[in-house]
Length: 166
Image (cartoon, rainbow, N blue to C red):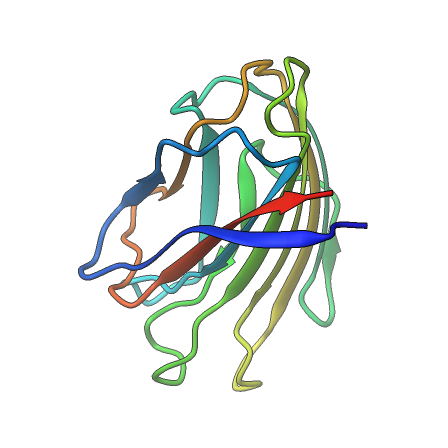
């Protein structure tokens, strides 16, 4: 059980952007937890992706469960960390993602788990995702990039990165 959560970095995106990076992550904790509230600039829900250490080619195994109320899926592309809601949903509502990176500073493959929910105002289909991933990158995590393909994260999207100590 973690004893301490320490805020490392947080921000609210001031303008629409296709990606953003959290850099210079200190190597003084045991685990990391990243919280996101993504919302898209387009009229469609979109996938959100993560890249560790600015490397887009080091994803390996991924297990994925998605439920949208009446359908479920068990696979998706590597790097997927959930969905962000479209700008057509109720104003002021954002999705929510929570990603925990275990043992982020070791020289082993990195395991991480994502919990994601999109569309929380019950106006339309809501998505819930549970994703377990392993990165083949054995370097300590020093940066995390969040991006979307073919769209923009809306201004007002927020993140918080916590270090977890035992």
